Image (cartoon, rainbow, N blue to C red):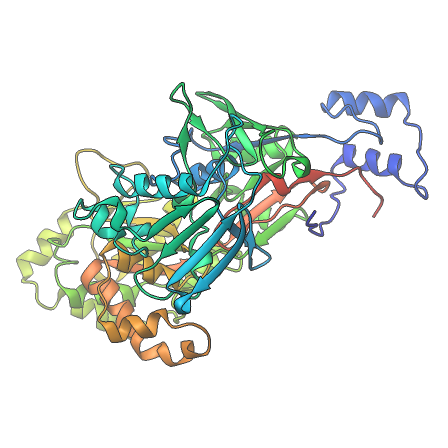
Length: 520
């Protein structure tokens, strides 16, 4: 198992008792009656010969959907990643084969041949085949509300999604345990693209309920709790150490944080539960802190192009230039997150210049009307993300003197003028978001720019001029204002090993295990 170095917290009395019990040159030390009572009181009635096989954690809201092809927030994705598995995933910044036994390119990366493991099964014990993958992806391309654009790298997938061609025209063929994928253009890093949840296989049982192919199955779901159980049909079941996972739904961020500190849950942090703004500073200074680089972007999306402040491409680009992304990364997040793209805090002279640009074409009456109306912004699902949106709006407010009203939950009566959101890069490289936005239709690049942006390796240094036009296009044409990467911050028990978040924001509970306490 993958081990993460961590420091033992002196405040964990139970951990200290277990350390004494397991120490002294490997010989077993008898526990006193008082020590045994303390272990029992803390619901950790284990001796040095027993190791826990359960895990307790929390999410903030109950999942709305657990369908891989549908849009989902970070915690929904975190649960999905335990129930389903794709052909590959990330591990130590490398692609690791999962359900695929081999993946081989042909025609310079335009065609890919995937051979499945021979021992793959669904959770009902039925065989999982290459045709299950083909059938699933075709279904995902046509499911109402699904993120079908993620599959548009496959030849004729976009046309099939729109009902313009038959399934046979799509670049997917299944023969035995071989899945052959033909792309619209060569893509040398296509295996990384396959790490997205959209490419998980899906199937329903005879009773109409979902079948799973991941390390866990959903054993129960209530309003305030979920229970996962290790999937005995999973191909690597023997190496799934945690057999039962109990997930509590705790809406209040402070309550969730305190639940960790009193021992009711075993870890807290992304991707399951973002540590709240009011406890973030304490978490950052904790000896139990773990931080992981993630290709996740926080950005502002301008929705109301009739708003006087957002009405022209030049103004939308000016708002992008006005946002202080380094402040968000260094002062609010403080977890190693960085601005994307790299830029500096705007000077006061620059702020004054931009303010004049934003209001220069407005009449006195238009400016007065604008100052009397509330410009409505929508934050993310957490207080932290609302704070990040406040940071952006203050930049605008100080420059233009306009009133803002910030919402934390959507108002069905009004689409917000702007909103804060986050998105995971599809292949672990933050620049791949540009490819995703191009497929989604909110970023249109000419063939020359596209070739430069999608280039691999040592050509990247020559992309600066082209990428600068991309940022301008994102803001001006699409109203997307990139801010910062968003790393994963986690607090975990010292004896829980294998805790890791990959570049795509995924944490696999099947990689975790408890170990008996050992002396420092």
